[in-house]
Length: 500
Image 1 (cartoon, one colour):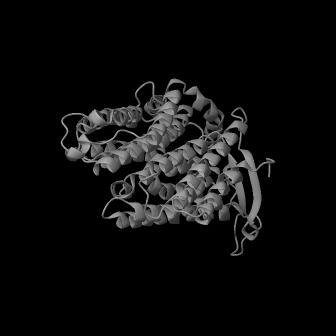
Image 2: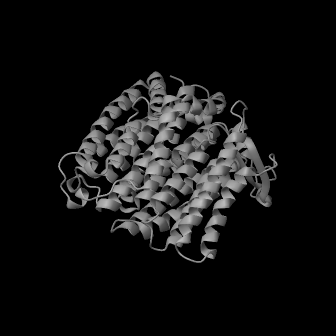
Image 3: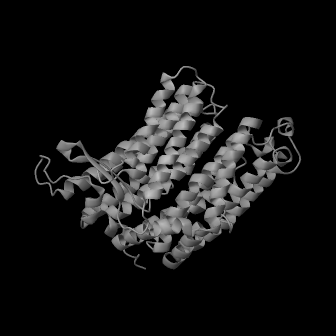
């Protein structure tokens, strides 16, 4: 291993150890404390990774390498660069927020609930660190197990098991072209002419990106990987699992699903670098998918009368903007896309956590059952407005520099898509402010709302931390852009600018 202290491995292994400890200690109530302490230890490790990371250096850092399946040349290969390193601490912070938000709401099988959360956190961090395509796929598929049980057992809707099955089936279907694409990459890289697996077989991401395939093979790889990641992103028409999951699943878990856009990360990390020429040829497809998502999500969100449904379709619209930024193949576009994905962690995740707190207090997130929430819960209303304005890209929040970079780059490369993005921003302001006014202002229409409590100390702590990070990144975006700049330039050098 390149580094004397395997920080990335410790980051991932610590969480299953904490999940195991939950079952070894007596008393159900200890589960949440063990989960919280484990996540805090992991936060310290992620900050150590960030401290050791050198933004001025090129390539991957903190590389850890060992044989995993030697006969197939599959390796335990881990590393981070400027495009992935910031996801580690933000992911841990989001999981800490989910643990604190679930402090009293997960009294049913708390050991299982919190151990599943830790396992999900471990596999998610593995996705951001894996540099072997099979290791990445291993972590990718492992996320399905805890998510299925979290949605099926702790969902708040009557159809929560249906939502869990639908989500799992969609992700399994998406995994088929993903696995097929990775295998084709490895086989074609080895220049197979026989049925036997040759010694040159490789799943090493760094090797694969340095020697891309040519011609129609690259096109096949591009389409397979794009199809695989499209389900998780999600883009139209592979999005139908998200509104169902947002409606039926536990809000804290939905915060993880909407806050961690792993599919869009996969587009940046794998789809474009592994098939750069095909990506250039199909830039119109990426821009078109992003354009459809950004408009469809915004229009669908306007028709919603429930906060959870609105946030689900809003998430589809916002991820469409990220896809358009990727399709611009420009430095500003890729930096804006990564910045926006980082934003989702705290903005989209934070909005769903607050929605869950509102649901826990009132039993509903429908406008017809709410109204006047700000009178008794001014702090909840204030932070919901802050996170909502950040999702709209209001200056002073982290959403502004991310959206500004994306829109400028898209207008320069795909003018029509850029105009669609601007139209979607106007629609976003309309649907968010309309629903916000209906839920938090006006007359109190529900007796439960009239007696509800404001944010508790631990909930206020979560919202404050999220809000501080959002404001710091909004007023000083260079803190993020300086970390991603060199990696974005390397990404651009490998891809090249889009042909207009």
